[in-house]
Length: 347
Image (tube, rainbow, N blue to C red; front, side, top):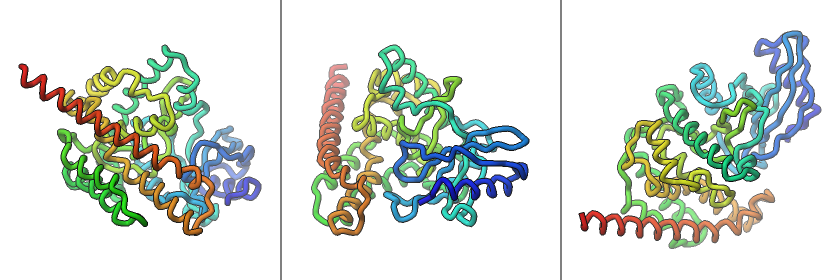
């Protein structure tokens, strides 16, 4: 675990190595709440060049719920920072663990609240404004050239390969689980039978939710926590945002799903056939295998006594809730498709 007192001098050395003046001093090192997978610390750097506030994202060691690669994340964030078009805090430097004791990335600090926390305390008018801003942020994010993604960033050969892999993840999850789970087979089969029209592959965040969006003082939405970024179908970000909102409302997309989709489609250049409430709902299910798999593996490890991470214990109730949520979603989508067929037959 990174201890703030010892971390201060290590951060000073890292900043000097990256070009900060020799008189740089680090202070106000404190944990930032909100993340689960990584250690997140805010700190202030003061030198003859001025005062800046930064954030450190670092590997947590043995306490990790899920393991991701800081170097790969850094290579992506460095490329996006140099390009300058991605709505995100600028990435400043990386350490492979030689100085900090664990791999970590230093980024600019955003002096504002999480979008999710702000939305939870907002009135209807503000929620409408936030929903519009979210559509614009997603469209801007997905407009960035996917060619900027470094070689280490996952990149499918085609849209079919991408969707096939996500469906296969559901089947693989059941094969690996400690007990048979018909729910997982049902989801995989349903996804196979209800593929939506394809969309162009874009650079996607991979874990997009309102908790991973910060509100800057000037009102901009800045996207953080990029460890699951990859090249894929952009609707995976919209779907996951709605998925998380079911557990942690409000659902900014669901306030006016038709209006939200229309605005995003207008800005992204995608058609209404490609982006609509039904296709977003499909991707809210399709992209869930990774997170649901982590949940199931964590529960199994806790039952076997292989982990003592307390967060895992709280996730036990999420399994049955997720069953109900996704079973209800598939039924609703089937009903919507049946209604659409009836309307087309009348025409």
